[in-house]
Image (cartoon, rainbow, N blue to C red; front, top):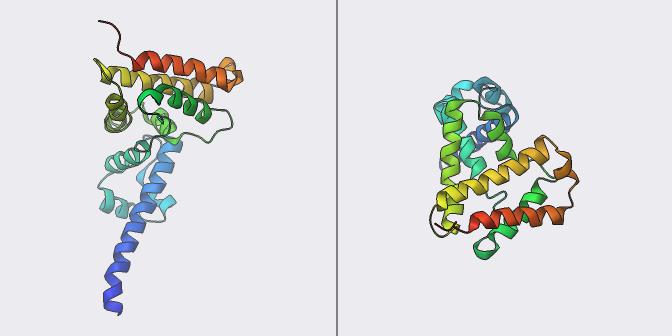
Length: 195
C-alpha cells in the first residue's frame, strides 16, 4: 500500500511545492517588480531553497515569465463580448479601479517591472497572448490589433490615473458618469475608422 501511494504523494508534493514557489513569485514580483526581488527572497517566502527554484523553473527569468503568464491569463477588466464589449468592460474598469476596490495585481506587476527591458519583453508577449489576442478577436475590421492595444492603453491609463496617482476628477467622478465616458471611448475603438 505504501509503495502505491508514495509516488502519488511525491508528485502531489512536487506540484504543491511548484505552486507555492509560483504563488510566492507572483506576490513578490507584484510588490517589488522584476529588478526589486531576487530568487532567494522568493525561496524564503515559499519556504524552499533557491536551488529548488532553479530546479523547477530554471532561472529567475523563466520564473518571472510563468508568474506573468499566470497573472495576465485571467480577464480582470475585459468582461464584455460582442455588442456588450465596450459597455461591460467600461463598467468593470470603473468598478475595479474604484478607490476601495481590490488591487489589480497584473497592473501592479506591469508597472513595477516595466523598467527592465527583458521583463518588458516578457510582459509584452503575455499581453499579446492573452488580453490583446482576446480583444483583437472580438473586434472586426481593419487594424483590430492596434485598436485592441489602444483599448488596453485606455484601461491601463484609467487605472494609473485613478488608483496609482489618485487624480481628483477621476476619483470623485460618479461611477455611472465615468462608466458612460469610458464606454464611449471604448466604443470608438471598437469600430474601425473610415479609411
